[in-house]
Length: 303
Length: 117
Image 1 (cartoon, rainbow over the protein chains, first blue to last red):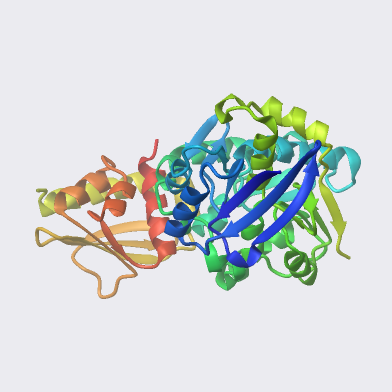
Image 2: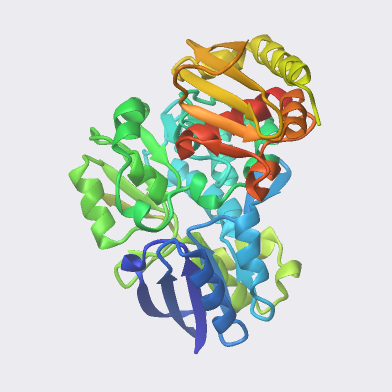
C-alpha cells in the first residue's frame, strides 16, 4: 500500500484518513493539521521524510503564478526544504491542470458557466490556471486578491491587470509571514465579520464564487443561490454552505469516503502513481494521468 | 546616518510618487489613517496622513497615530526614496511598525505600488 500524507498549517479538526484504490494501487491518504503551528509542521515533515511515498503541503502555497511568472512563498519554501527524501508538492502543479480542466468541463457538460456569467475569484494568484480558463470562456470576472488578502476595495477585472499587479507586489509580499496574507490555524474556523460586512456585496453581485475554500468561507455573507467552485470540503463545510444559501457546490477534486481532499493531496497521490522524480513531471503527465483516472468534478445541488 | 531634512525630502518624494498614481488613490479612498514616522537615532518625527485617498506629509508628530513607523534615519530615508522595500527591514527587525496587522500589510502594499518593479 502506498502512503500519502498531507501536512497542513490548517486546523487539526479537519484531519482525516481514507483508503482508496487508484489504477490498481491501494492508497492510504492521511491529512494532518498543525493548527497554524509552523514549527510543528516542520517537525512533522522531518518525521515523515523517507517514510511515506509522497507528501502534500496544505494550508499554505509554495508557488504562486501570474502569467508565466512563478513567485515563491518564503514560508512555504521553508516547509518544502524540510523534506529531503520524499517527493513533496503544494498542489500548484495540479491547480494548473485539473482546475483549468474543471472550468472547461463545467462549460461543456453543465449549464453552470454560460458566457458572460459573473464570477468572483476570491483569490486568483493561487489558482491562475482556473482564472485563465474563466477568462478564455468569456466570464465576467472579478479577482478579489486585493480585496480579501489586503483589505483594499479594488476589484481586478482582467488577467492582464492581475499579472501587472502581481509583478509589482508578489516579489516582496511573498516574503511576509504567510499568516499575514492567508487565514491559518483557528482563523480557518471563523469568519472575518468586518470584511464580510464590508466586502460581502462582491459575493452577492456574483453568480459564481470560486477559489480556495478557506478564503471563500471566511468572507462569505448570506447568499442567494450562487454556485461555489472550490476544492477541499468536509460534510461540515457542505452544511455551512447550504446554510449560507449556496445553490450549487462544485469541488474540483474527487470525493473519497465522504470528503474531497485538497489539491496538494491529490497532486501527492499523482506523484506517487507516476513514480518519476518530481522535477521530471510535466503538466502533460498530470493531464494524461487525470484522464486515465477519469476524475470529474463533483457537482452537488444544495437547494 | 540621514538628517531630518533628508527624511523630509524622502517623504516628499514618496508623496509625489503616491499622488502621481491615480489608481492607488482610488484603492485607498476608504483608508483614512494617520501615520507617525519616527527616527530611532536622531530627533526626527513626521506625520503622513491619508484622507479620502489623498496623502499629505508634515513635519512633527500627530496628536494621535493609527500606525507608527520606527527605524534608524538611514533606513527611513532609503525606504521612502524607494531604494529598499519595507519587507526585508520589517522581517529582520530594523523597521518596526506598530499597528494592526491589516494596516501593516496595507502600508507595505502602498510602498510596493509606488516603488515596486
